[in-house]
Length: 232
Image 1 (cartoon, rainbow, N blue to C red):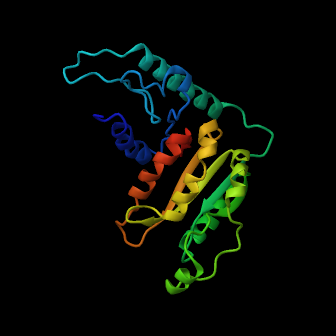
Image 2: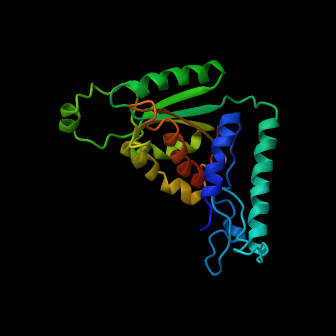
């Protein structure tokens, strides 16, 4: 556990500052032994890796080489897809957000309009509420926006989209419970790899200047990486 995931994760801010796209492995290397626990090996959802041992004496195993090869295939296919001519069919993006006081709703409307201006179809959904009406009233929350709710019976619709934008209010430097519950409800898609390779981005709202403006994006990546989604 000497950096098998954290090395990938802490490298991502460098890519983000360059405006680069991050392509994780996800769990595409299952057949190559990514899930095999009979021996220690590298290869997390973030990407290929090896365990060199403290003195550098251990060389990459056949399993690790197979996993990193699969990551190369995933990356190459992503590059090839990005360089391919634009398909004649219209692309579809789904915006899923949670907004208690309206801040994320305003951001969601703006980012959706910008995506639409690029000729992409956009559907907007709110994450399901986890708080009671009494709690929301006590917190002074205004009425909810009119966008439909991405309820559990709507989750299967996610496979219809080419990309996603997730609006994440911050709670203690990470996403709010409502958005975490939404991601937790996508476990069925994770098991099938149904969202692997789809494009995703995030936008956030925080209470203070340094109250999660970067960490909310960064900690949300674990959800996207486990799905094998491409982060923009």
